[in-house]
Length: 296
Image 1 (cartoon, rainbow, N blue to C red):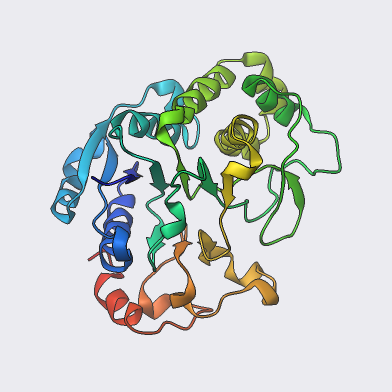
Image 2 (cartoon, rainbow, N blue to C red; image 1 turned 60 degrees about the vertical axis):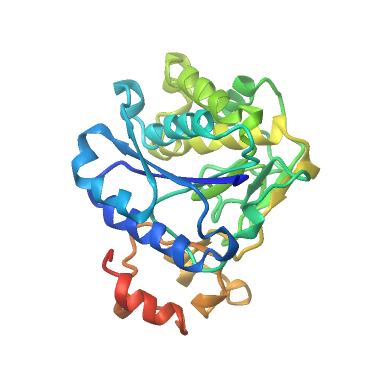
C-alpha cells in the first residue's frame, strides 16, 4: 500500500490541459513515486470537460463549492484539501497537494514525510503580503494568528526571490501534510470563519492581495503554530521553483538547466518547449516536452 497520495484540482477550463501535463510528468519523471495514487478534484460544472483525465490513471472527484467560498480566490482549493484529507487511506503518511500549473521533473522524494516530519513546504517566493519578522504583525496577520489560537510565531523564513525575512509564510503551489493530523479540515474551518467575520474583512481584507492570499496566510499560521519547527521540512529551492519568476531570481540562486529541478511552478506562463525562456532543456525532458507541451 502506498503511504503517499497526490492531489490536484481543475477549477477552470484552462486547467484541464495543465492537469493533464502535471499527471503525465508525475507518471514519467516521478521515479519510485511515479505510480502513486492521485486524485483530481473537478468543479461539478467542469466534469465533462475534465473526464478524459481518468485515462491517465487518476481518480476524478467532483467538487461542489459553496458560493461563499467561490467568492474568494482559492476558496475552492482549501475545500478540496479538506476533502483530500478525508479521502486518504489510513496508512497515508503524506498528502501531497500540487496545483495544476506545476510539473514533476525528478522523483519528489522529499514530499515523503516518513516518521520524522509532519509537513514539507517551501517559503514563499516573494514577500507579497508577508509579515516582516522585525516588525509588529499588522491586523491581517493578527487576525490569522487569533484564528489559529496564537499571538505570535517564533518560526521565520526567507522569501526565495526578494530575500525578505518573514514570519512563517509558506508557498502553496505544492506541499505535503500528514493527513492524520487533520490540519486541512482545521484550515477550512478557520478560513471560513475569517470569511464570515465582517469586521475582519472590512478592516484587514480590503486590499485585493490580502483577499487573494488570505488562504495561504491561514495555512502558514496553522502549520507554524500546530507543528513543531523540527517537524516542518523546509524544502530546498529545487522544489516549487518559480519558473514564472525566473528573470527576477538573483543570479546566484537561479537554476538555468530545467532538468535540475524536482518540481516547478509556472502559473500562467506557457510551458511549450518552443516558448521556454531562460532555461536549457536537456534530454529526456526535452523530447517529452515536445510531445506533451500542448497538454498531450
